[in-house]
Image (cartoon, rainbow, N blue to C red; front, side):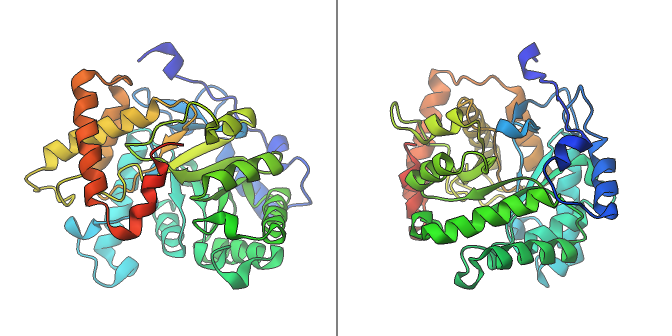
Length: 359
């Protein structure tokens, strides 16, 4: 691995984490201090020499170049899902996938629903110091018209953290309406105030939002550059950066970290169904690696966050990180062909993803 890929972590001390905050409870302070001690001054959290780490914008955190998205679509192809998240086989699958992520140096989980927060908090029990955790309880955030005030949003954060047994979250990234420009300026201001309050009280180390509305993402970053640390937004295997007026111009200007969701366009990139015995499993795994490599060729992307449903899928993503970034002529042709088929297979309710072909 080249020297520049083995980035070193500048760390985050207790004073920096709590700067500008109100008085935090002794329990939170002690818990956060213990966890952050694992972030050495020389290595990213959960460092693995075979993994690449990228700086998450102004947060200064070094994040693995591929992370674990919260969704578990197609998990029924590898484990029974009866009884939902309380099914012990299901929870074991999530525990095993998180364990394999830790083994491979992946150090961020993005949980964006109440169920995901609960499941991954369980999976991290006893090893919270191995992973950064992104939190969104979207059911009680901005997509719910009854939850668009500072008090409601902050209350939902506190309630969710209590239910999940969390003293703090690394990133609170509120889920906006997909077309977030539909929110009023007053609603957005209420959200920003809630995000600031979470940082001030030491409940969230860093904050941001999720949106599928590129013009509005630019507007929010430009309007609240001192609040927004991270943006979560679609970035598929087919996405290209616009030569001018790209959302990444403002991302770079204000040093915002970016997590890319839907890298495989809700699995439409693949011919198979994610089952380990799928006749196209090998081909699909290769295309997945090409997609990850292609996405990471954009240095403004911190990391794609695919939902991974098996240890084998974790291994495949980790293998992609070890392969060269630039695709050769044949690989580009193969990914282009797969991307064309991806759009053809895309379900109607995900048709909006085509809007992310150029960003």
